[in-house]
Image 1 (spheres, helix red, strand yellow):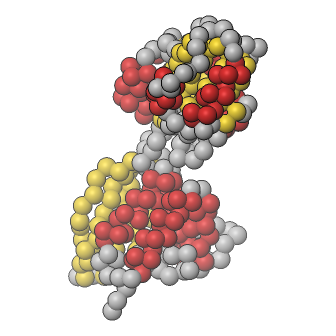
Image 2 (tube, helix red, strand yellow):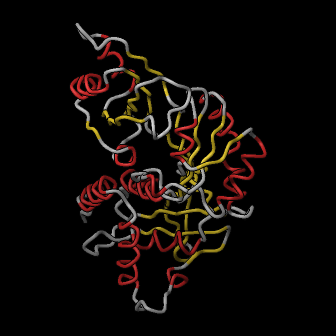
Image 3 (tube, helix red, strand yellow):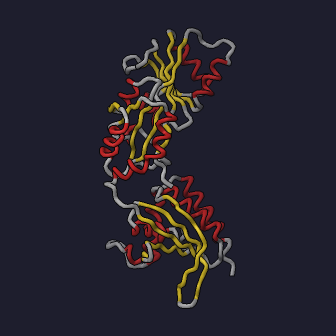
Length: 336
């Protein structure tokens, strides 16, 4: 559910005596754009490549030596393959990779997370741009953001401090997969995680669609880690068992906040109720009345409308479209 890490864009440093010729050639074979460093980073994705052009190859490339910056919407491997496959590629050029970029999602006090990582690794602190200039191809730059890693990451959304760690990417990420939760817990003050259970009830039994819809919501909002799922029985009335599908998950979001999300998505965008999603913490049921807010009317569907819109505002358009499509598919099962 949670994405704690995301690869950043690939950076490569390319040196040539004739910057103009190399620039024109890279733009032609990559269909890229010449931008500033910040503009290139802000418009890039994980599979893109930012090319830093300089006249002299060196272990470190400062802003004074940076001649041009190009963003290419292809991988560095693809770019280099296209370059060397040309009949007459520009001569006398040198190329090397820059540090690998990793962006870490943080919660709570990021300084505590940084301190804990510095305790475990030999690190150098600095801003993202400074470390990029000072680093070579033998390490990684670990940056931090409090934004969802599913959203676009901009330089301005990165925390002011980053860490340069002189380790191979594969070794560092293997460590991170084991220790990520420890660092996250450090940031949130070593709070206990909540173990919650969502019980889905649909009288029309469109459980496969309901499950896909709920997982889309949980994953997009990064609300928790799913621990397991199973069929069970609930008793809305005495001696009246009904089949429900339950999902157990960990979260450090307060149960009432999770209930607000679930309440909002019991309804479609036009206010049609299509599912019952009960939330339990242990044996305690979190009721919709537990989510009351002073400024909202004490009317269930009115509150749900507000809560749904809050969640939608934090989602990518792609996820919202998927949820709306699932809503339409679920509505087609409403046949008496």
